[in-house]
Image 1 (cartoon, rainbow, N blue to C red):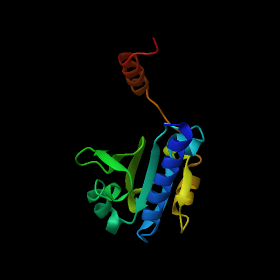
Image 2: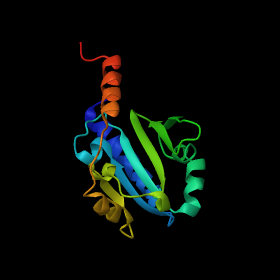
Image 3: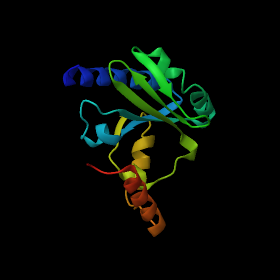
Image 4: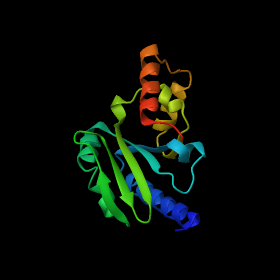
Length: 160
């Protein structure tokens, strides 16, 4: 499969997902993270989608996280963890979408929202406001966290 076809298929999947979620008034925001938001994606990059839902509908979306992507063209299979609030779904020809469902009432500013984000649906400005309130926050990493991350990287091995 050529790279242009992969990118076109990924764009179509993203368009389908955003159209699906933005049709529900309980979805107050949809945004991208990862390489697509950062502008560093290649043809093999996945979609890191975040869906912000009102509290009264959040459990519905979490409960349906494995069923929703099955409705979309090209669905192959899901990866999921019981009790998680996300699902990773695979699509033809070689697409993957990670969808995380956030309860709008539980979201608070975080340095994570300073990372590249591309807002795709934000009718009331909820996501934009969250990003703005996160602008001054910084990451703090303890020495133990740093040691743990380094040891995980070393255990995984590096380039040969």
